[in-house]
Length: 260
Ligand code: GLN
Image 1: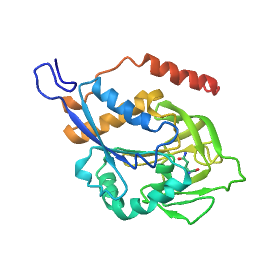
Image 2: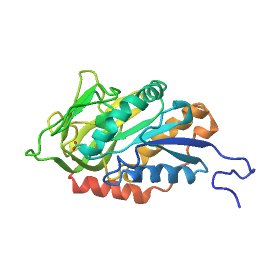
Image 3: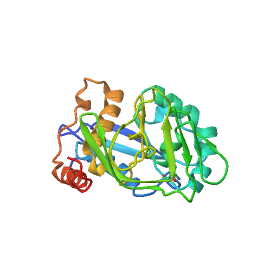
């Protein structure tokens, strides 16, 4: 019986390590499903994905990881996390980002990787300033950005669910993840969604995001494999999977949103 990451000749297959930031604080609207998806899509290819939690108080040592994930949370969890992110993890996070490690940041995590998050109540939360962007909550009396969302991404689309009071604005020159085809996106005004800096991807898409966007999940895995094993290595070529169910769900969401 082969171990799940053993190849037929008995050698261990490729392995990746994912650092999961604040799994107990930032995990709303199914964001943990992104971890499950990455782990399973690796396992189906004989790749071992070790998921290592980065809790409050833990240092972020970039050499220990091949990719990072930070999920979303309510304002109170963000308040709890922001100081730790700045004092314990920002230097290691910056080093990882500048070394092109793939990072996925969703909603509240996305907001905290930008310059600051100004919540509806309480002090402004300085962020890790990875994204040249900032977020301002519009106040409890203003309707939140809630609902299904679709955006263009590279030559394809991404679909998901958003629920945020904060409105995010990108500085001139900052790269969005994509353009909004349906839904609110960053701020319901400029038709932009998310932000990208090197291989760090910020987005408001919960859902969780990756199960209905297998192409994005594989893109992140491929970046991590190429970075660890070399861009032309055999380990960095992902075998295709039967994603018919995933794409059926993706297309059903596009249809529901009236996006062709
Ligand atoms: N608390 C933030 C906001 O309301 C982020 C919410 C979230 O992560 N879903 O904008």
